[in-house]
Amino acid sequence: APTVQDSVDAQYTSDVVNELSRVIADKLERHPINAERRKQGMTPANIVLYRGAGGVLDVPSFAELHGMRGFVIAPTAIIGGLGMSIKLDRIAAPGATGDYHTDLQSKGRTALKHLDLHEEKTQKEESR
Image 1: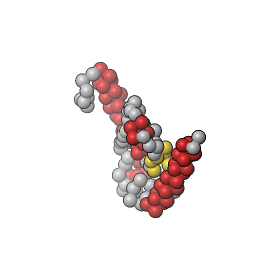
Image 2 (image 1 turned 180 degrees about the horizontal axis):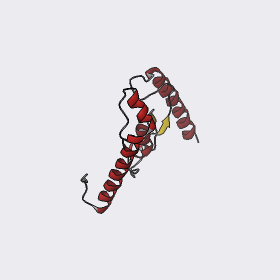
Image 3 (image 1 turned 135 degrees about the vertical axis):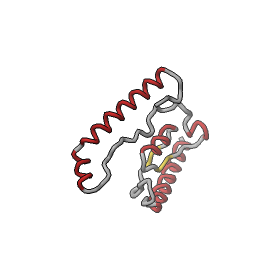
Image 4 (image 1 turned 90 degrees about the vertical axis):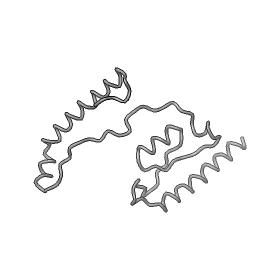
């Protein structure tokens, strides 16, 4: 595939990803799990989705930009990673799934709990 950027590094990365994709597709085609899926009339797995590949950007933290601390309730790695990249604490909420089955009540309770904890921590730091 052509690269978005016209550079040797971009072309190398594109070539590596394309070759890896070809090898994975070939292995998946012959994998026993896919043979079983075909027997059951199911669609075989035929690709690995590369998503969110890249490096961490050097950006100011949320606190540096806004003068406040914060956290992110993120059941998925991509959202958690985005929050962590700006130095937000990643908090887990029971029942949070990242899809329409997520437990919104749990996320709300978790947010309130951690807002209280952050407030207590801030008050202790200011009293020093």
